[in-house]
Length: 103
Image (cartoon, rainbow, N blue to C red; front, side):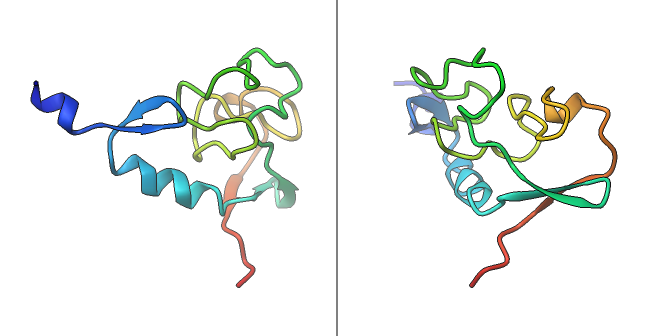
């Protein structure tokens, strides 16, 4: 068995490095995004305007989000809640993820 195989975990059916599990868990608490100074709800995987990712049948291949999960910030699969294009390449200004403020 190769050493690469022992340094993997499975998250929603996707092979990830073990440290990704904590990154993914933390992303689930980031539910809002500030765009141009206005606060918006982030879209969960499967809520996209076009289901090109097939969330109902497979996890996000970029960040391992399953349907109903939030993408990890800066995942290329997350959609902008304003312009409905890929968040990391959209032209909406001053994007900042906001961690959950509730205790």
